[in-house]
Image 1: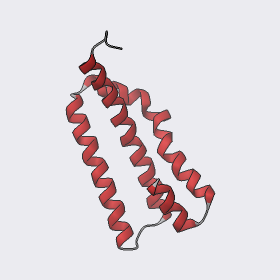
Image 2 (image 1 turned 90 degrees about the vertical axis):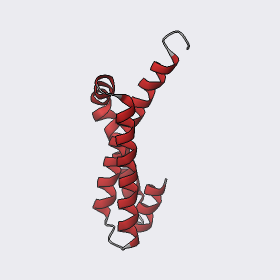
Image 3 (image 1 turned 60 degrees about the vertical axis):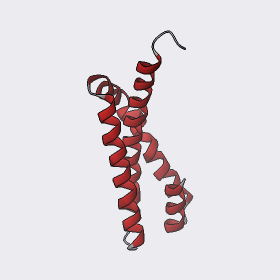
Length: 107
């Protein structure tokens, strides 16, 4: 929601808001299956730590750009795609880890 609000405040365009939100969801379509492969092949706890660090760095970068009034539309679009990519990897890994913890017979 914060991304949509910032894009709206910067551009005053619903088209750009929709484009930015679409860029956050595009990685689900593009990287969903490869993210599952990564989650299956590597240590899930390490993946989650790395992804959370990447999320924190993304939010920090966005905040710094916003505080210095250097935030351009292309920054927001790139950060939207990057954040969506990290969210795809996070969600896939988290769900795989939940299955590991709960086990196959506990649904």
